[in-house]
Length: 176
Image (cartoon, rainbow, N blue to C red; front, side, top):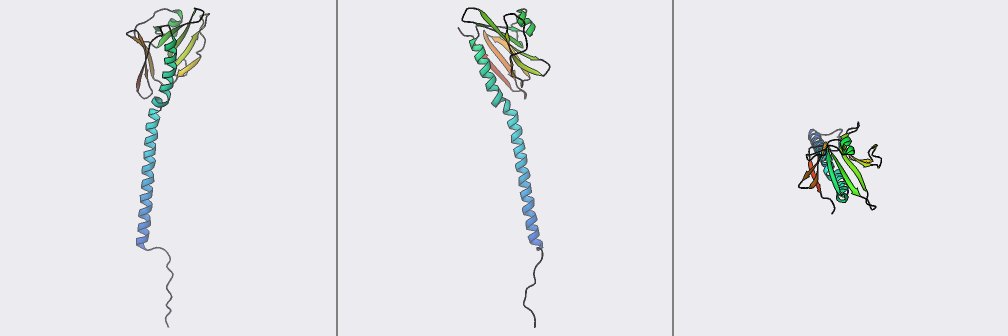
């Protein structure tokens, strides 16, 4: 008599194996596509990070400083700015801002785009009464590739070129 038992199958048929491989390859392809898309998004985000994060903070600092200043002068170097020599009307990397104190005396600060050995940065100096300038109080920003101050129709303009070539112009007038 013949046994009616079915034989146990071990393994998969060729069709089942083909379907499983196709699903695996399709999932792998989708994962790689999503990963590449995420890398492209992060690259775009990093490029725009300067405009989204750094530029508004620079705008706030500079607008507050310029808005409270009584007058300004443009110079080509911090040494000329400190000495008060060779003022310029052309675009310059250094601006001196003068502020009238409550007692009637004047106080000066300097914004300077320069390389102090650690790379280009926009520095803020407070000019002491003694006239001997020390280290900058702080760096406003270290990200731009160029900063230029100019005067257009009596209005102080700061043109900032970002690390990826983006150009931002800030304009400000003195208080009256």
